[in-house]
Length: 401
Image (cartoon, rainbow, N blue to C red; front, side, top):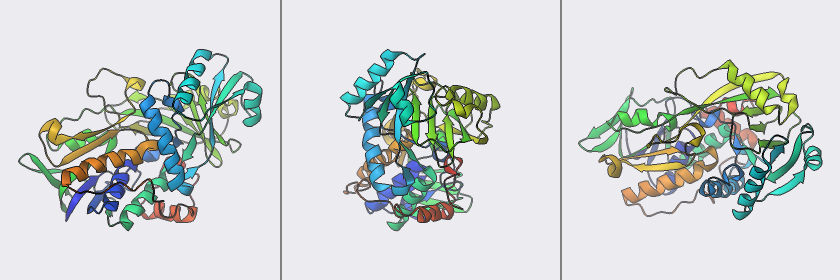
């Protein structure tokens, strides 16, 4: 099989790159070892960030989030649930941190309204008496299975070939150039390869003798039965375990931890983390301490920290587009690493800008203007999920069977 660009990885970023390139007229093949959305994207907590979480310590990242928050509300339809978000200050939380976050949001034009404790409890029944005040921001919820599947459907509508259950054995090289990849069923030859495999990016790069220093960290998500929450809750303190609660239809997702792991395919489950999520999140919403457990799942963040200086939550959540011709002397390969589900489309745009420049293709990005297919039809979106085998634990309670 021959193509102009081979994209390896069928998470949000990979299908986003395939969609963007296909819309620019590039011939694209995307290969994913399992069903789409099987990795990090489908194992996230599904929060569409407003940028408020990052405002005081990462203003550039916060700007990206609020921009993409607005874009996804426009293009993704029923792949997004329109909620509010509250950053909640409890009695034990530093009021100075709340003030710093509020000032940063206003500096970045992230809408933020302050409610006192009584008003916050009126907005969200079930909040504890220990709430001092809350900041109202435009957080929302992403259903990643629908988002990834609809993005893949759009890529296909524009000519991309989407190959699920197609593992890549390794990259093919000729001298100092990557020329494609091998699969159990044969070779895929390409003028350029995009490594969008997330936490597994280092493994794929290694097949071309490229060292790519990923620092994967696992996060535990705990889904419990509770149908009375319609607002994303964030603990207003420096990022820590158990400081986010994300509402779905009849459940809420409690998250999350941040623990470095050696192998993203290893056994990630830890019952102690489940109990810790309940305990920490019950400070925000006491009812979750005893709510029936629906399921727990673990995801692995594709964090990139080549310097080795930062650890855990100190590692950047930003994204990087790596040109391996400049970085490693290996032409024909680009890796996109890091980032957040909220910014997947922006990551794809930056990657597609780079690849089209390398290919000499003069075409602009249009992915922020064109709505995803089926965006206003939840049943159609769910049919794409079934077609691309894109279901994941993050939103399994929402999807129609």
